[in-house]
Image 1 (spheres, rainbow over the protein chains, first blue to last red):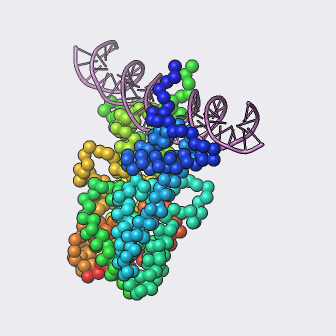
Image 2: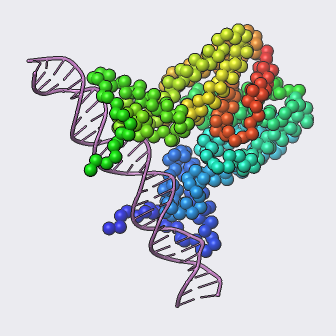
Image 3: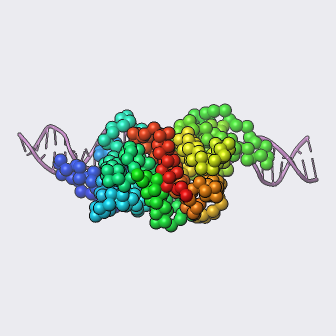
Length: 211
Length: 211
DNA sequence: CCCGTTAAGCTAACAACGATAAGTTAACGG
DNA sequence: CCGTTAACTTATCGTTGTTAGCTTAACGGG
């Protein structure tokens, strides 16, 4: 009378004592894989993640409070990549203004190449958390700070007009996020060539922000 | 042995023959109300909508193929309001450039005041529809066309440099959408004063787009 | 006036989901 | 070898979107 097996795939061997956190990493990896494969946050179920990790669903909850926290953790890990990706993209660019623009281009590139991660990070409702703003846990803060620093460098070099670097960075963020999220959310729109669009935006801001 | 009633509220009287579409309107109204009340697309269930309309859940499917289509219909109706709201906001503004900026401000205002509608319209995955791009059914196309027209007027008046009005409009859309969607998705971010931010963006674009 | 047709809506149920309570198994220290 | 407990499992709950199939009431025709 035993029904169909609860675990369709191979069962994961039990971890040794004290090594329970190994499962956590496996769950994260499985969830990330499914997230990328399906490209749909809603299509990735806790059961599917558990199955892919060779484990039953309740085991997920030994490591994550709920599904939201799990998906968030997946993307939080990607945030480091995100920041690093942009930093890397501008490593060899001496001119601070060109670095700033290239950072923006890298932002859009990363977002469009990881649309589901980007969606969870920047396009979904924030967790109704008890702690509304633990300011340093705001994921992506590091990346934003680097943007502010880049803007500051441009101001110091006289490449753009002096002013509130935070304000300028925020509006630049809004621009690149606007492009990225619209490309993800409305791919059917008759988009102009992306390079041309980015080029135009860079031109406008180069002139608009000039000293 | 009849369990709890399937309909908690008052039951809706049956429509007369040929007037079945009356229910459709009631469902849309109920869904819209719940969407605004809860402020959460996921919290609005088909059962809750049906109950609010005084009807059982399957009756929903006499008028909408699935939940997505229903919520989409709710918002599509709001799109006309959206376009009208912006048009109204700039009705008495003679200067085309100032009208353009005020259209942008109205855009952000409408979005932040109707965050759940905005979310469904511009921040969710498009329906995996068979018809990928029936270009005129693209909701919001009217509003976008009006933006393109405004840009064209600015060019004709010499308020901004001549060029591709569609390209300029697209990038302006990206900017206002960026602000709006980030305000909705990440309210915990230490946002600068919105008027100041919009003012800065207007300044940058006024200079960046000038002839 | 009744009666067949059919629009309008219901009851019952399904499969899948996120989540929890409570039991079981296996690794380790003593 | 045994008790403890970390590491899982089984079984189940309530809810969700959705469908199949039955019932009821409004209407047109005789």
